[in-house]
Image 1 (tube, helix red, strand yellow):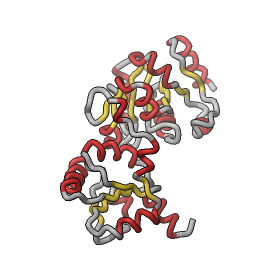
Image 2: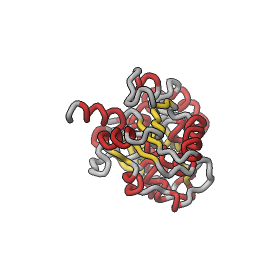
Image 3: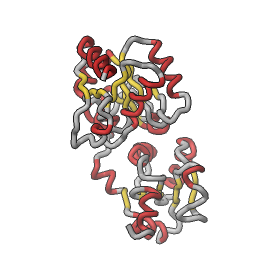
Image 4: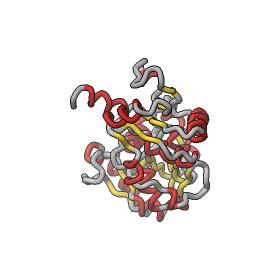
Length: 267
């Protein structure tokens, strides 16, 4: 309770419109983190220069799209607490953490970890995430190293779903196109030696250089490309990379390998 009162006092004195958590159907995880204070998109926009913004996603996700001037310190980094402690010591600004938003818990977890392990008293979660931010603030969004996001470059849900296939359809289409490229985006630990198409899979992980080489080769030879990851969490970001590379004939496995296993188990 004391920590919540201290943070609330800071918020009021700073003049920032930051509120303590309240349950919200659009943000299903808010109820799980009642001790974390959040900031809404409009409030963060209005006081953009008053915060140090930290992107806690993977370097790949950050490289695709991020809030302008945000620092990339992945929550998964073993040195996360040390890096946050150093960052917090460099400025008196409150730290705002964000991830992919709405159904992503990393921003909340980062705020808690920053307070508990890095002693960063003023740690706030922006749980609208990168996609809410990009839609509201294209000029304050970096896409593939471009200083400003062209609103026309935003990929809507309908275009995303047009390239998303159920596990059954994904496998059927890939099998009927023997010249198609099949890209396994998982890392070594996630794959555990198991592939969908053992003799055809190309393992690239999320290595941008390797992915660009494979995509460019497929584009030149007019080949379709089928992508799958561990659980379908990364493919929205990957789509921006694919579109930027000029590939038109591509597909994603809905739910990744998790979706595939659910299919074969009859779920």
